[in-house]
Length: 109
Image 1 (spheres, rainbow, N blue to C red):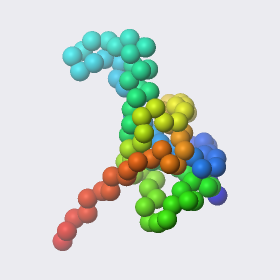
Image 2 (image 1 turned 30 degrees about the vertical axis):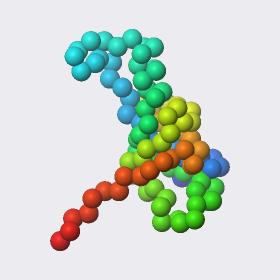
Image 3 (image 1 turned 135 degrees about the vertical axis):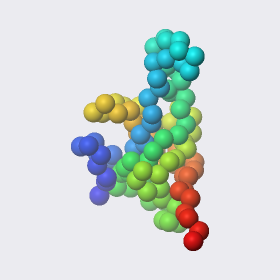
Image 4 (image 1 turned 135 degrees about the horizontal axis):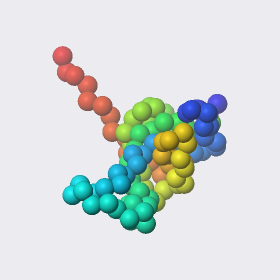
């Protein structure tokens, strides 16, 4: 069964990644044009993994490498379709577009 996030369900071999929306101002305090913001938003290549469809990662050799919900992942540039849902920005993409997953550091006690 596929995962659901705020009523948004991912279908098939696709995954849902939440990306951070770009601020309206640059770090220098200059307002960015909407076209420039859109271009930069489209080229973002990382975000937080939120959900997967029922057949996502089915062809992986090792199931232990599947990202957990909330994991920080990197994906190929311009991957998937950007959608806005309940005030958040997501990218729906094929599972194979995820390149890497950043594991949280564990304390060595």
